[in-house]
Image (cartoon, rainbow, N blue to C red; front, side, top):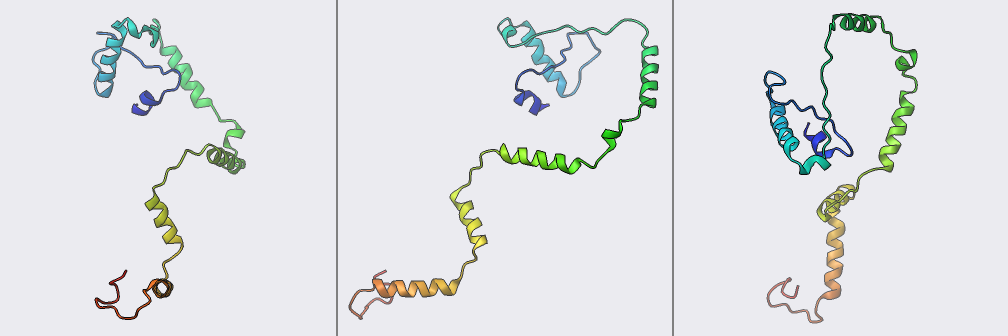
Length: 153
């Protein structure tokens, strides 16, 4: 219900039950119905909401129910509905549509770094060799280091 209420694109039909139209509304819909009651009375919301009254038909429904039951009992689905030979084609078509209309993806630098590190494992020996050659190129020209190896780093 939350998704329907927050992501409706054009129209959404919600049943509103005026006071004493049914015995008692319970559950989450009670809160929604209370809000619809306020919107019905608000004159400013008439531009956004359309109210259409719907009433149950008077009369004997037992004959309708029996004919509906009989129709459902005698119904057989068409062969095309039962044919699953084209399901793979439909799956591929839907997959292509999903790829074409994929949402924008945002990654942090850290997640990109982690995925790169997972794809290219770290070689400690190569790193050690590269650092030794770097030290050799950037070390001062004199050999004496009074405070150890990392004093000028």
